[in-house]
Structures are given as structure tokens and as C-alpha cells.
Length: 619
Image (cartoon, rainbow, N blue to C red; front, side):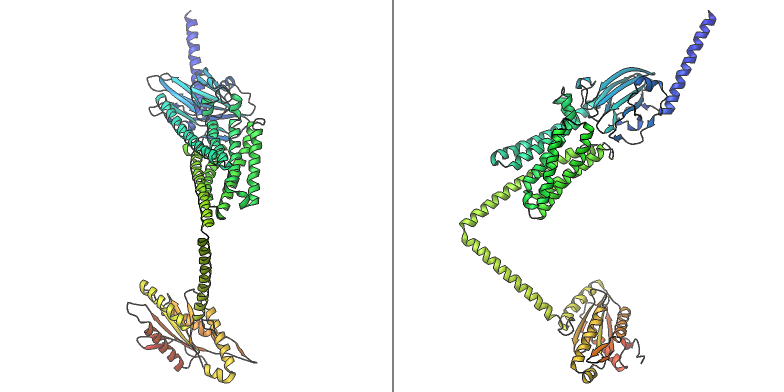
């Protein structure tokens, strides 16, 4: 008997050791469990482990018995887009406190088809929940649009929660743990937000439906249908419709999302065509938007017959393209003068951004955070308000047009006065154009097509003030063609004119800055204004002009000849006193010195030595 007791105790020890070894192995394989604390209202996405069941044949018993290699969810939220596989997820929670704890575990994505939840303790399934949006709503253990299970965890107890998910919708598994009070407070707040949204959309739709009854304009009817399609869509995707409206209608719950999205496409396209009058704006765009209306209507019918996954993968790109096309149509209409289109463009722009965000989230590109999750919902409210403004503006525009038509019919004299004023304005415009041409002519030398001295003095005065304000340098070049009288005497006045034209053209083409100008001062004398240029820079420009002009080949009758120029340079930093005439006088003195020293040279004015030669004649 003592030996039997010893063997029995020994077997218990071996079993305990074996169980401990398995738990340690599982902990190393799946990571440390989440420890409950006082601030447990948090996401557990990083605590999540998963495997993909390609065969869809795995059961919970096999999962618990097999040493399956679980993959850790590294992302903030598990999102895998659309998948044909079944997926298993595991989450471990431990209560290290001295008291039992109660929590709510929420899977916050309402349109998963089949969700099987297993609560496991010490390797045994203690609770099973079979739920999903294709199973009766009453199968849910907690009355919520999402999939929520209550957890009671004893002191020092560890619970393993397994999820098996098979769905035709996009696979998203956002897991969050709640205190009970916090969860129900959150549910209440969420319901209030949804109620405000649905109430706002219904009020907007009812208001515009009354306008439709008064005006009998189909634009308002299409708009009402479009506005009601938005909350219908959100009732489907959020699970609120299944919770409150069609609780026992499983088949309708499976197609309601497809149906509402098709309605959005159909009535959005019909409203766009009617509201903008697209056939008057662009035939091509009108046909394109009509094609989207046909596609929306077709999918509205097919949503009852084709699989959910196939339908949604067709509808998501169609809805995005339709939204973009509606925005383009509105932009074109706005550009072509449809005033009410500006609110329409802004409204559709908001909805387009929201639709892109939602589509990206559905295929797993963006996480399921509040702004992303409710992007289309927020965007649709803003769009509905802006489109209401557009409709109101359209009424005001039509009222104004009717009033103007009545006024025009009654007051013929006023219309004739308007026509007369228009003719006067046209005549005034013609005179202004003529004055501009005359001004150009008055500022241009007719022979050389350079600016004349009058225009030069205006620009000189303006640049003087600008350089004075910023304390920048201002330079003037005074240029004279050497032996110009000899050219006239030897080759005749036509040759002299040709000489002036060629030299002017060469100098004007060498001006590199838009602010540098060349003007003809009279006869064979020219002046160059160089703002933002000091004496060294001006001397370099002057020397380049002198060198290039000397290379110009001038043809007179059957004879070719060249000329040279002499240049005087003057530079100042303008001050408070007006020294423009002094500056021109200094340039003239420098020019005179260039002439007296043999011509074909550049001389800069130097106040210390009156003038300073820059380059002597090499001939």
C-alpha cells in the first residue's frame, strides 16, 4: 500500500511537470499573455497570434492538440484584405490580481460572416460562441453591433481566447478589451454619434423631398435618394442595421451592403447629370456619367445573385472611378460657367477623399482608426450639406434669371441702354488699345527700334528710386559711334542708317538682364542703364559691347565696313539727393576722355582723378 501511494504521488508530479512543460512551450511559442490591469480599455492587436487555414478543415481540438506555429501580428491592426481561407487567431489573458476580474472582449468589425469564439482554460474549451453577420443576431452573447464576449477571469487564472473567422468581406480583426462600465459607456456614445448622423441625413433628405414636391424637379428626387443611400450604406457596414432594423433577415443582411453601395453609384450619377445639365456642358462626360449610372443599376440587380466577394471587388473600383468622374464633370461645368457647380465640386471632393480612404482601409492599406473608419460617414455629411447649399443656390439663380427676364421684357429702354453702354465700353477698349500702341510708339526710336530718350529718363528715375531705397549700385554707359560723320560722308546717309541699326541690334541682343535697357539718345549716341551693377561690372559690360560692336560687318551698297564705339561709364549708389543729371554728366565726361584718347575704348568716371581709362586703343 505505501508503494502504491508513492507511485500515485509520483504520477501526479509527472503529470504536473508535463503540463507545466507544455505551458512553458506554449508561452515561448505564442509570447507572454496580456496581464489585466486597471486601465484595460486598450487595443490588444499586438497580443494577437494567427494562422491561415487554407484547407478550412481545422477544428479547435486539432488546434489545441497540435503544436502549431503561430505567427505574431506585428501590425497595429490585423488586416488582410479579401481571402478564401479560414483564419485562426489566439489571444492569451492572465489575471495576476487577488480578485476575480470581469472584462468585455470586442472584435470591432461588424461584417465578418462566420466568427467562432472559443474560451480555453488549462487546455480545455469552457465556452463556445458561434456568431457572425450570416448567423442569427440572437447568437451573440452581448447586444452589440460588433462581436463582443464577456470574460470572467479568476485570480491567477489564464484564459486563451481563440477565434476562427471565415468571411467573404475584407478580413479585419481589431481586438479591444474593455471594463464593463467603459464598454457600455462607449456603446452609448457610439449610438449617439450614429443617431446624430442618421438624423441629420434624414432631415436633409426630408427637406429636399419637400422641395421636390413643390418644384417637381427630378434633381431633388435623385438627391434625396442619394442622401438616403449614404446612411443605408453605413447601417449595413457598421452592423447597426442588423442590430436594429433587419435583425432576423440574414439574406438581406448579406446583400444590404452591396445594394446600398450600388444605390450610391446609381443615384450619384443620375443627380450629377441632372443637376449640372451635363448634356449642355459636355456630351462625352454626359455619356461617361450615364455609363456609371447603368453600372450602378446593373450591380443593384446583380447584388442579389452573385457572391459577395465578387460583387464587392467590382463595386469598390466602380465607386471610386464614379466619384472621380463626378468630380471631373463638376469641375468642367464650373470652368465653363455653371455657378452652382462650385459647391458641387467641393462637396464631391470631400466625398472622393473619404471614399479613397475607406477603400484603402478595406483592402488593408490603412488601419481601422476612428478618422479612417468613419471617413466616408463624415465626408457624406459634409457632402450632403454642401450639395444642399448648391441646390439652394440653384433655386436662387433660377429666381434671379426669371426676374432678369421679366425686367428685360418690361423695360426695353434699360436693355437698349445696356447695349449702348456695351458699345461705349468696346469703343473705350479700342481707344485704350490705340493709346497703348501710341505709347509704345512714343517710347520707341523708329529707326533703331530701341527705347528713346524720353522712355530712358522714366526708367532711369524709377530705378534711381529703387536703388536708393535698397542702397544698391546703379551704372550708366554713354556710347558714341566713332567717326560716324565720316561714314555718312563716304557711304551716304542710307549707310549711316544701316550702321545705326546694326550697332543697335548688336547692343540690344547683348543685354542679359531684363532690367538692363539700351536707348538711343540722339544721332549716333546711345545710353545703357545697368541697375544692380557696380563700376567693375559695368566696365566689363562696356568692354564686351565695345569688342563685339567692332566685329559687326555693315554692308552699304557693295561695300562692307566696320565701326568702333567709345564708351563712358558712370556708377553711383543713389542717395537722398537727386544726382541723376550729375551721373549722366560724369558718363559724358568719361566718354569725352575716351574720344580724346583715341576712341575705341572704355573709360570709367573716377571722382578722384575725374576720369580713368580702362583700355587703350590697340591699333
